[in-house]
Image 1 (spheres, rainbow, N blue to C red):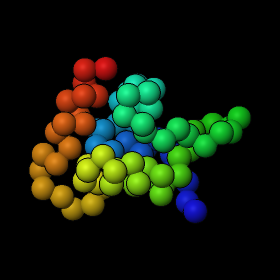
Image 2 (image 1 turned 60 degrees about the vertical axis):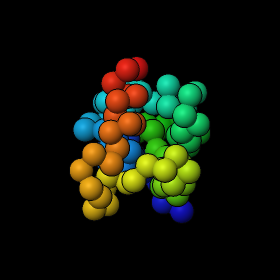
Image 3 (image 1 turned 45 degrees about the vertical axis):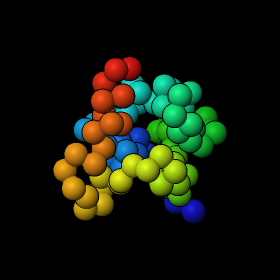
Length: 83
């Protein structure tokens, strides 16, 4: 099991920056069933890589960190901008 920081999650999910992802994180957790970070009292926040990938798979979102066609995450980015 591997753990990743907000920088890596942002890249996987399609955000340009970790700050952008962190700004949308609570909404994604509430409305999109995004996995929460691992419970810890230390910073930085960390997520299970497999949980984030499972969320991407379930949501039908291509992982932008992998080679994908341009525009594969347009819907997610549009929703994030609304937050």
